[in-house]
Length: 199
Image: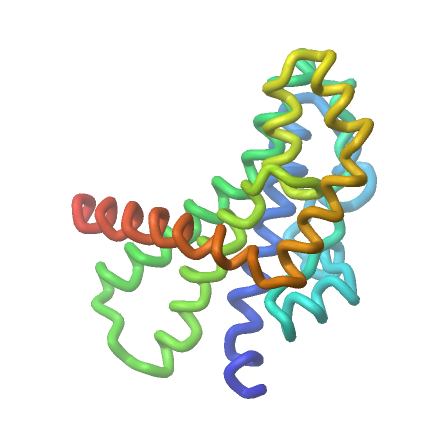
């Protein structure tokens, strides 16, 4: 339990920045929905779903309150949806890169400090990768749907409730880790290589 409490700030950083990024990009694209509902903030209480966060904290899988978005405000609905959807995962990856740079440049080797900082690196990679899976309600599903022709986009959203079931089964059978671990490894190696180039 102590280890999980130490990791709590890192988890909050990853979740809150992810959700804020969605709202901020939507706002910059002309959608004030998130701002009007008080979600354009870094206040964790505005983004956390109590049950979803408890499950995420204890079991490793959960959810936050989805940031309300209205694609009809975008000049290009499909492009706007893609940009807003990908903003969360890209923000997570950016935070992971910044964390790795910080550890490297400051030559942090104190175990106590690393116990707080390293989880920021790992949580952001994991959250970013997980949300790119193209199954609802994850960001990847909205990206995929927006890339489809209108006819197939309509069918995707029409039957998305059945795709929810696939995600639940993947999580409950722990098959999700078979998908996530190799992808996390790819991002991990990419970031390490990038940091080595930058430093």
